[in-house]
Length: 152
Picture 1 (cartoon, rainbow, N blue to C red):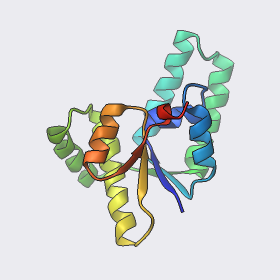
Picture 2: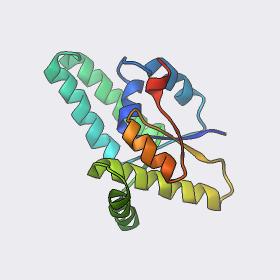
Picture 3: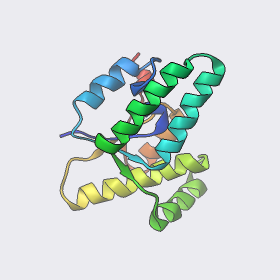
Picture 4: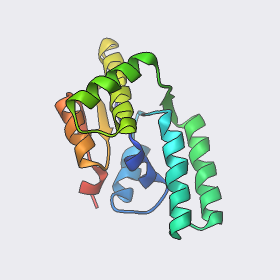
């Protein structure tokens, strides 16, 4: 059993070709569970739109990618809504690590999921993220981490 937490930087590789996409797609296809914060939805749509503005994604490709992503959010990913406990933990993480706000929310969500897995005696979570600063914070907090960019 393999449980992955995907932050937005990792998840995007599932939908657009960039370094680490082939590796990430292979990991996702063999995963037992794929977990992320509900914030992922907003961040992903923002990232997809940024690519349209920059010209690396056509409007037609955007619609296809967005629709596939939204369907995956309903059927494939376990989307965790932000709770007061996650927000409180994110604030603590911001005091411990040089993170941005949404990054702290992703890490707090992953740590909360990890606690639930441990209580249920289930396999640990691996935090997938393409941001070295986030991975350093996640590792410091006790999560197993992997960076898709390390697997071009």
